[in-house]
Image (cartoon, rainbow, N blue to C red; front, side, top):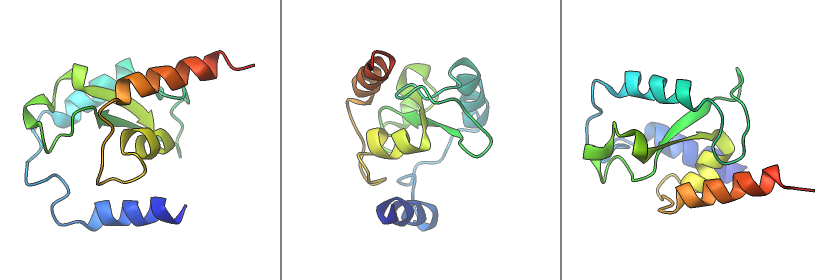
Length: 114
C-alpha cells in the first residue's frame, strides 16, 4: 500500500506529469462522454461509487501519443486498483501496452469464476 501512496504523491507533485504535453480543451467533455458509455471498470467490473471513482486511462500514453488523447479507441475505464496495477504495472511512471487484452482476460475470468 505504501507504493500506491508514494506513486500517487509523485504523480500529484511531479512538476511535469504530462510529459510537457498540454491537455486538449476538449478532454473534460470526451472523458465525461466516455464514462457515460463505460461507467464500470472494464477490467474487474466494479461499479463507480462515490468514494470509488472510475478513471479514464489512455491505452497509449498521452504524453507519448498526444494525437490519440481524444480517441475513444485509445481509452479504457478502470477502477483505482486496476488503473495502478494493470494500467501502470504498479508504477505511474510505467504503462501496460497490453492493457486492453489484459483487462478483457481478467474480466472474463472474474465472470467465469467458480
